[in-house]
Image 1 (cartoon, one colour):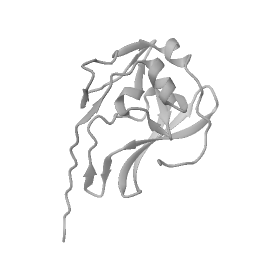
Image 2 (image 1 turned 180 degrees about the vertical axis):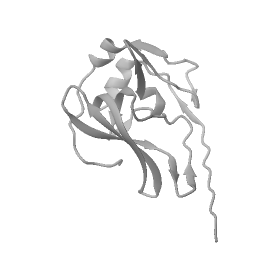
Image 3 (image 1 turned 120 degrees about the horizontal axis):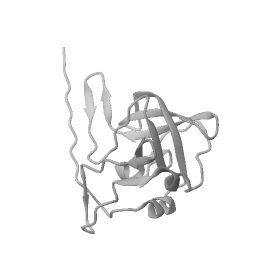
Image 4 (image 1 turned 30 degrees about the horizontal axis):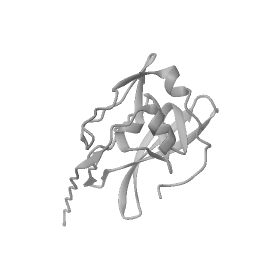
Amino acid sequence: MILLIAAAHATLVSAALDPEALAVLSDATAFGDVVEVHTTWQNNQIWTVATIDLVDLGTEADVWIPGGCISGLCMTVSGAPWIRPGERVFVFLRDHEPTSLSQGLFHIDGDVARRDTRGLAFLDGGVPQPEIDVDELRSYQPALKPRVRGPR
């Protein structure tokens, strides 16, 4: 029996981005409830794929997050966001991936959206705003058009 264990550690240095900057860098947004999370292997990389019920559109779409575990093989991407089934999220997307990793994914709790940017180092010395009003986030467009597609 062969056991392969791999770990990837990276330091991501990035500028702290506010929602307006994230909207400029994104090609879509998604707002909804996470109905399923699974991992897959594609393009020589492990991905966590979250299926989101897009509450405004009455359909579902997949969000691809780098990293995850498959059959004991794990890939960790520093600064990648976490996501759980059953939670409500707002995501700025570029090619179906969260824009600027965890800066682009907000966890919704009532009227407040929070992001977890642990694992990110900011070259500009800034720190992204950790909380924002959900209605403000929802004002950013365009909304994600559902389609089956993986990461670039």
